[in-house]
Length: 121
Image (tube, helix red, strand yellow):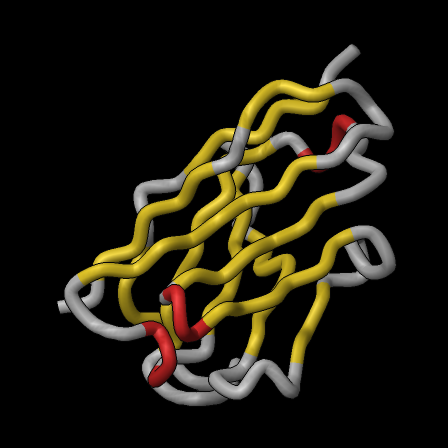
């Protein structure tokens, strides 16, 4: 069974960058589209980005477009989220989620445990 583990979160100042990683075990990521979803307590969760199996199609929420970049390394069973120009509104727990298919329209499958990103001066 696919298991996902996020890493790379932390506390940064506005304008700084972080790179989140989503590492898989138990199965290979290459069969799944992967999304990054963030959750703030009391707010609806937001899928900030998703990448297809091939990596040829990526989606971004308007709130992060131009600042975040998703990528995948199927050989190393890892998906990344490069986050630049971070601002306090990006503060959230970030989860990687496997879609049950090759495209970002497939239903959600396995979730990671989440990694906290805090942007504050």
